[in-house]
Length: 166
Image 1: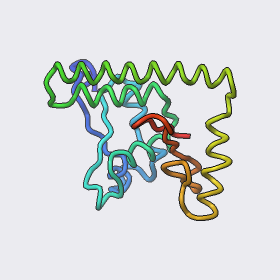
Image 2: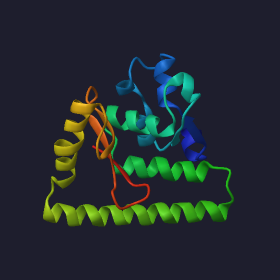
Image 3: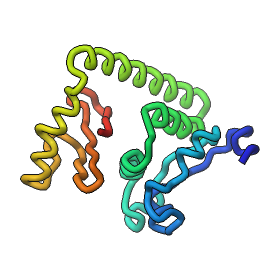
Image 4: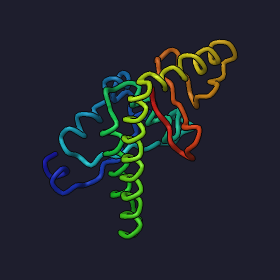
């Protein structure tokens, strides 16, 4: 494991297939957080989505819903994926720069929102998304509402691809 961390060798982790193949009894036992804590260059991937039950976004959503992963882990996983890709170095630098800019904007927006109403995003989920899921089976303004696992994914109304896991 030391060599993997030292040489920054990328590890493609497929959480949904890991649980389907009984590597872990359930997602809450997955070791991806421990791998990150040990400095391993971990990426989240999908493995045969039709069979294992989810594309990459679903792997992210279920992993983050089941483990105490935070925004720093999301950043690290995204950065690792860019660095581990087979893209040209110049393209990787552009992607990481864009990631850095996105996280800086996110942090600034969170600070502004917290100053106005620290529960604003939760209120959207609680007042709009959850009732819609309960009444119609559709997540309303959210992308996903999973009542059993107690999480929702809220898409930014303005941004093209910003999603928030709550």
